[in-house]
Image (cartoon, rainbow, N blue to C red; front, side, top):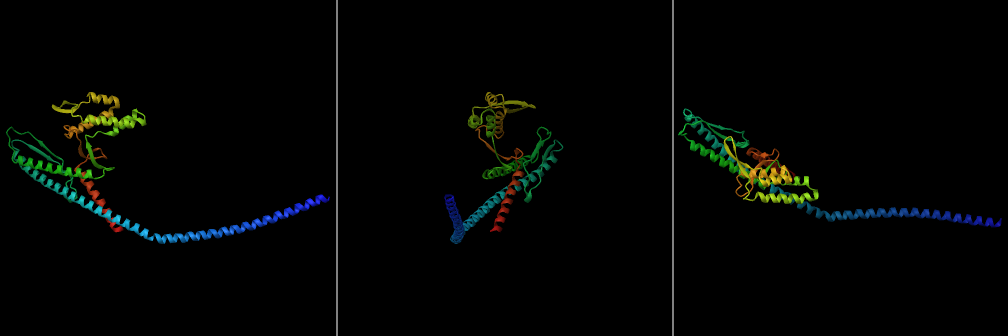
Length: 339
């Protein structure tokens, strides 16, 4: 039919036109991709050029930063040298005091030996002096271990040189106390965080015990403020000079004053927060009495071995200070070699 042939012809023409458009679009797409690649290459080249330009401009800034770092390192090195010098002076002072103490102890031993020989026929004077090992450079390991034990003496017995010997020992104790005070002063100036040895404030109430007790009894959101309030309250109670919760007991025929755990306030604290909180207050009172600060309810400083939970000996503290000086010296040498 003529109409059918006319439609087929138009469809064929339309299909041919569509195919030509598709080929044209493909060519355009290829040209677009080529142009895109060229633009990308130009952009990369431009970025590289700008980076090189910025690098050249920034050289002065880099050099200035390096100069500042070098100056900071020099300042740090100078500060380390000053710290080492200060610690060396303190160590020299400690060594001198300990050498003087050692000499006085040796002199006292000789005098005591003579006195013991003279007294032996009528009475016996027993004196035991426990010596410790020596640290390097002649330092005494721990010169605080002197015990005097008197034997039986007849009434009216006079010991030759007894006054002189006693004076030497008293002088030795004074020297050791001076060394101890200097060590405490030095440790107070140091950061004690995380250290094995440091300073413990004797008579200070343990706040962590109150925090733990409140956390065990109250919701976490309330425990913080409650523990702070209770801790502050008992700090104030400990400072109250009118509160004297002590009693006297007899031990082996000797009178001894101890904390009265049956005190009404202590019993009330134990009922409210438990045994640990009560024990913390008792410990603070006991330490105040031991260090003779009950009169003003202040705190006393003590050299303390935190790792073992006890008082630190002079030997431990001096060895610790020596190690700190060695570490500073090694650090100084490394920085000197680096620069």
